[in-house]
Image 1 (cartoon, helix red, strand yellow):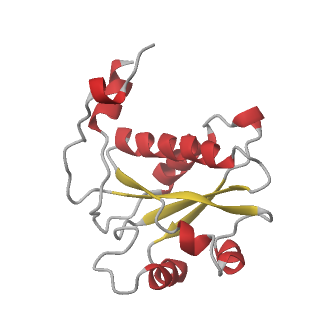
Image 2 (cartoon, rainbow, N blue to C red):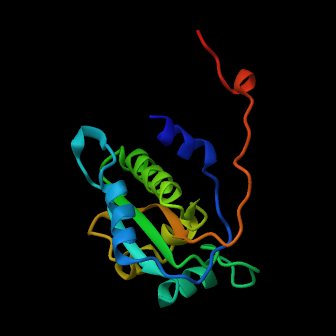
Image 3 (spheres, one colour):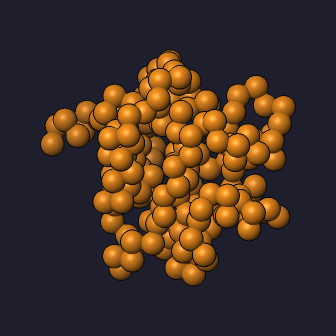
Length: 171
């Protein structure tokens, strides 16, 4: 158990990646970590769409999000995994959050970097929602929940600190 707690202690959000591609088996391990996440009522309704940084949909989302930004929203990570969920199921957002955290921690354990992305929500669930749902191969009736960029970190930063006394109440 202590190895797992070290992964949590050392995890951080990486915002700079090398161009080194992720091997297929590593990518599969990451997605399987998300698939193994618990879901409400064991519905297993979260869908994972893996998109490489060269895919035109990445540039289109960037253009709609902020064409003048210095960095891309995915920080030029080689892969972005988009999680969509059944919009008729009230727990899809929670389930996607659990799944994306599994991917984030698995990436850390594998020596990779990742950053959880929510900034595209207004674009992917906005006026071009149907278009993006098709381009990202979301199943019918599914909508964007969250995404995660993953790759080999080019720069690192210290994990964040916290104030237990301020943020925790024990009753």
